[in-house]
Image (tube, rainbow, N blue to C red; front, side, top):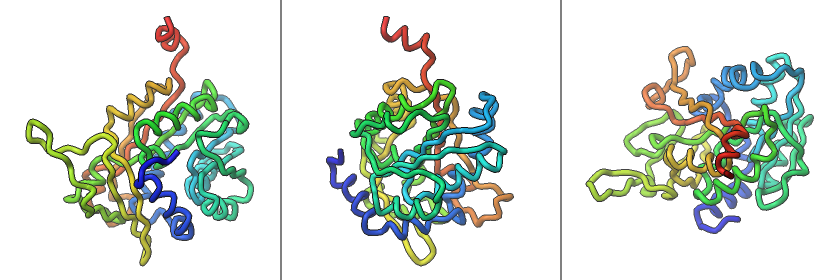
Amino acid sequence: MFTTSHEIANQENYKKSADLHNKFCLDSTLYLAYRDIPALLEKHLFKQNNKESYRILDFGCGAGLSTEIISKIILSSGYKVDIVGVDLSEENLKFARERIPHAEFVKTNPNQCLKRLGDFDLIVCNFVLVENQHGNMVNILKAIQPLLKDTGILITTNCTSKVYQRSMKWRSFNNDFVENTPHQTKDGKLKFEEDQPVKLQILTGKDSFTFFDFFHSERDYKSAYEIAELKLSETHKPLGLETDNMPWQSESKYSPYKIHVLTKQPIQKLLTHVL
């Protein structure tokens, strides 16, 4: 599945530094990846369904932080939850099982058959697509799309291009790497290229964890969603607010993340593709 040194480096990092991954907390830029999720779930999931219980899949759950947050959001909203987390790293899953004993965690990857996991009202895919080249990103989306119920939603969270711009200063990111140098286009503009390897260091207290990502434009994300027969319902870019009581830097003016809310394509549109 992993064909580039960039992708392999991520997996080696997870194996060696799962304990650091487990230390990620919300007293950081990461807070913005989750702050507005309750409102998005209320709008796109809870209001569209008349249910007492929801089945959730956290695809690429890592050490279980996102799994724990989503579980707490749904429970605090007054619903029951059945939650499953999957990840490639057994080292990460050990921490996830300790963090959330009531959840089910499975080691798997998109090359394996995922149908055995069942179907879900909500699938969360946080910072997974950004770690894959466009072709792998499409394969991941095509693998998890069939697991989504007709009334369910898929939420993906990834970094914006601003995160990798070396002129930007973030609360808990170091982006000052040569990989984060845009290329000059024929018309003289500087732009990141699709599938360009980029690099981001997450600062966690005295420790740090490095991610090896790939740059994807909004257009390329939309292209991948369409190929996987997913409809983009909303793009949300959270900004740092004074009410967050955080010493934001670039977060106050520019969003570090883009959160995409997706549903399955309506059957009418799928039929037009076939006919």
